[in-house]
Image (tube, rainbow, N blue to C red; front, side, top):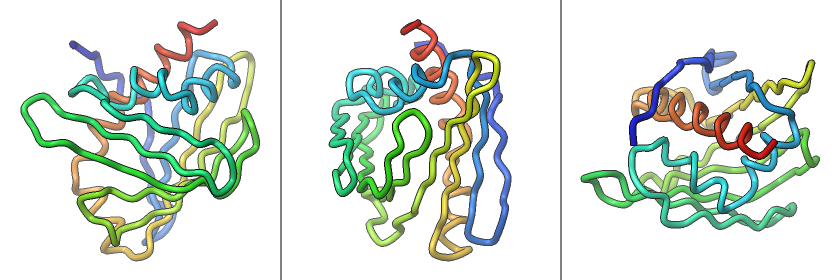
Length: 161
């Protein structure tokens, strides 16, 4: 799959333990939320076009768990999981995130969706436990895959309208 990368998301570092990802989508908030929280839709964007998402499990309730697994083209399986801590439908989701290759590196993510003129801004604040964990995340190459995944998320959300 060929994915044009827009680099529309902005990555900033509000503190030594935080990463803030912000991106505007040309889609209404409820569609972005739906694409962000529906397993079959997550499979279409989360892998960033770099492989097949084989698992997208979502138990969308406070205390519920999520798990995504991707088999990258030519690479070993990559899995992430976490727990939902707060859910305000169409507005905010707070959840933990653990890269299964580094199980001690749990982060707390706060995803906030705001609407304006039929468009949606998604802000994801990633709170790491330490600067070392934040820097390891940044140096993992996460931004390239994240940009691609968010571009696909926009396409999936827009296709629902």
